[in-house]
Image (cartoon, rainbow, N blue to C red; front, side, top):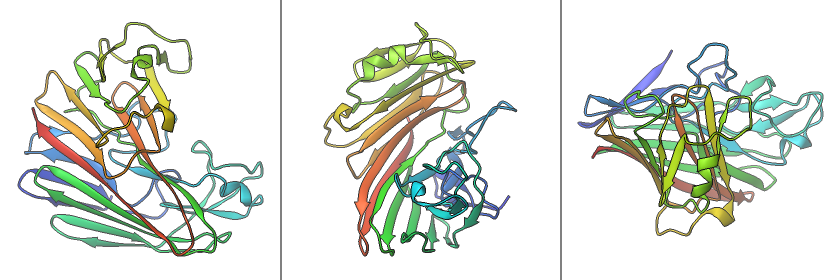
Length: 305
């Protein structure tokens, strides 16, 4: 597996480089972070699934996805449609929106990678399809104990692109399993109290009590999550206004913590997790007209309490 590591005196960030065939038809091949190591001792990243045989979409560590509602259904069966970050996918016989649980077959976008000691830049070149095309640039750099991602999305096609982008963040603290001792601060969550009833057995939507508790804007795990999952979706009206948007994850048995902060107001939030990872997904949303460029930034801070 081809990888590249950027680093400074505090952080080491290892990337899985894009390869053909694409590992995932869901997640962006540019900017898949295998692992982040703080001060040579704290780790934060895990794969989407650890248990063999479980269904997976091959997520890993800090990895993102571009979503463009309404574009895939424009492709007839066996016709291609663009999945930015991946390539041109071939529409299935049943048509419809792109599904993360289906296989399509991918003609990958061409990608260039500029590698440095403390920064790496991925550039995905346009490949017009159905009137849609975009050049996507992602620059990652490390500054002190921060990993900063700057993204630019240039619409080079003929049609407006209804763009959504998020980072899935398959993370934990020092490989500690999800359970008692974990805490997740969610200052923007207007429905955070409902999370106490949003834990389920995998494959069963019957709520489980006593697994998590909520105090103020912080979610606390009380029991282990083996065989369980939790989730919540926050639309725009459920997101509390803030001066700055961030989340923070920490554990009683580790000095380490992790936060992600944004340069924009999230248009949507999805929360999800299982036994080994806690995922907070903050969405960037913007319609990008032909000739226009959207730009935004995310900053992950890795520190000790």
